[in-house]
Image (cartoon, rainbow, N blue to C red; front, top):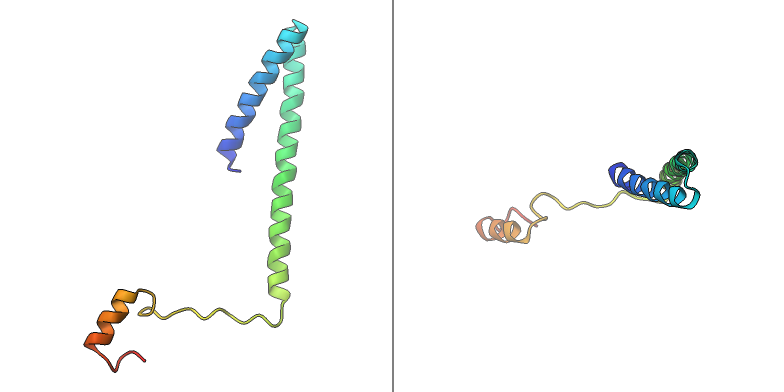
Length: 98
């Protein structure tokens, strides 16, 4: 999840929590306290989720490096990527391409 998207969702969630707790308790201070607590929990959860994703990405990269039997992928040459260009070159210069 992108940070701006998370920020908008977090702001909307905190506004709902603020309104809900104010409607339930009738106290603005209790509503603000619960909203701050919810903000801390949401931010901590986001931080843990990002750490988990980064750790998983590093583990996948390490596993890919450690595999001995992996050979590099064969990439096509610059004239083999587009069928139209290859067809025109093979028509104009038949001995150029294999």
